Image (cartoon, rainbow, N blue to C red; front, side):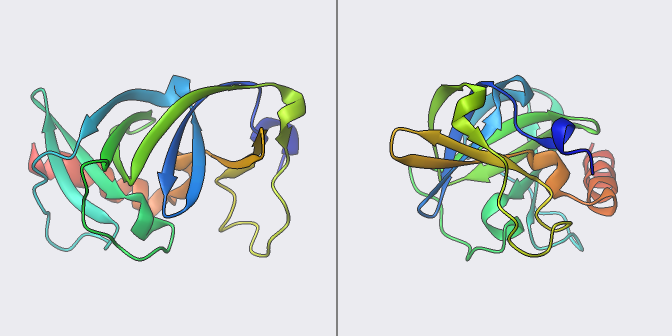
Length: 161
């Protein structure tokens, strides 16, 4: 792995919350943020895929990041949002507990991710952002999905269209 290309870079990040932890995703990958709308379940999909949604005439897959990250599922609240990101396969909606804010991080505020065990499984963690007394887990959500999972999301979008 080339550590330089994978490490989070200075810039703007959209922060969101899952359980008690805050995560950051590079703002340039974010298309929009929506309230949870009608999601149509698609049979025989992985448990983290909640289904598809119609976003202004375009069918996009929606995943529950809590489930994908191995956290217990939770009912939706008024703070639950869908962050729509641009990925190589097209747009993907990610359900998060809440969206917090857009932050600016300098290189000095970003540490490389700690070695926590299975490097391959945690490859989507790009760094740890330090903001005041908070730690923000910097993620590349798209890389959290295997090639097989990405193909499944493409097929779901095509089948539902």
